[in-house]
Length: 409
Ligand code: AMP
Image (tube, rainbow, N blue to C red; front, side, top):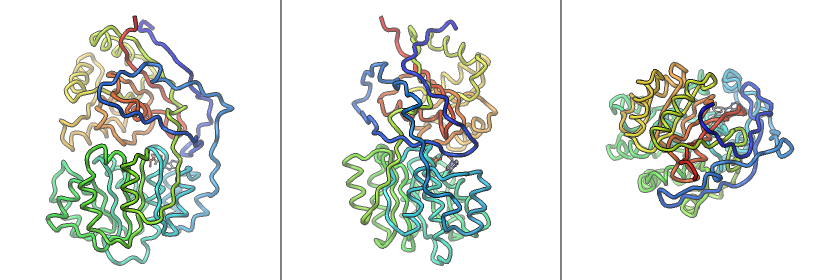
């Protein structure tokens, strides 16, 4: 290899891998170090220390899916998805949610948190006649859409319906969906508030509220919208609150919105042990591009997610790769929703093996089997780094993360 790689620490690729089962849950805290923008991060910070096999804690669920008192059709839909055993968050929260408790779930994306709330909520809908009865709020359109997709799979044959209420797409279809009186409304704060103001969404009948990735919603400035929405809801409801971090702001929200909540924490450790992390030194931007194109011509780069800092930079890099004979798609804030969705689908379906993205556009996306994450531009915060590399090495698979840094003299 002509490019210079420096490897810190090691990977642990020896974990058993299997179909769609969740193996491990490691305790530990996140080094949430959200500092001022453009903070210098020492390269050693990017790299997780080697993890030996002896350190591993394989999570052994107390329950099997069959133990949960779900109806036959729901059990059938779970098996059809290929889920074998509940993940840690599912194992611990499903019984609480079925009991009607308010729950704080401290869990990152990739832990199976979506099914952890969807399954018991779906089960609790049987016999509910007032609609809509469930409101799920997520920070990004893509995340809301993924929740909706999972909902549709789990709700098959159950006569339960949803409306997906997100910005950036035509509102007429959403209004039509709302008029059909869905059981579930799944959406992002801005559009939800907009349609509430237009009296097209009424929340008096909501019995269950889910706030997903609450920390991200705060980061993105959605707090006022969320307050407006939640204040319009009956106080007598079940509230489920998911977040990867607990900051004082988050605690404030919990205090305001939840009643006597039970906390379940399954956060994975700071960096994902399934991800082999390396830094690659480069002289300047042209050198980075040279090294990157060379890498991407390698055989094992099957599904590569590249992070860039700005919308323009991301688009330029994607164009450059296209012109170098490496087809790619780009997602960033300058693309409209249908362009983003098309790009994401092409990447997910492996019709194109390279996607270039900004942090915000990639947030919360569940893209299975990413083989490599490449930090073309250095992340601005350590937390962003964790988020980025968390796109690979998911669900027990192994992955690689490369981070470009300036040559250290
Ligand atoms: P999430 O954290 O909800 O974004 O889920 C991450 C991925 O794990 C999704 O692709 C889910 O379909 C998958 N998943 C969730 N629960 C399970 C399970 N019990 N067994 C296998 N895969 C799962």
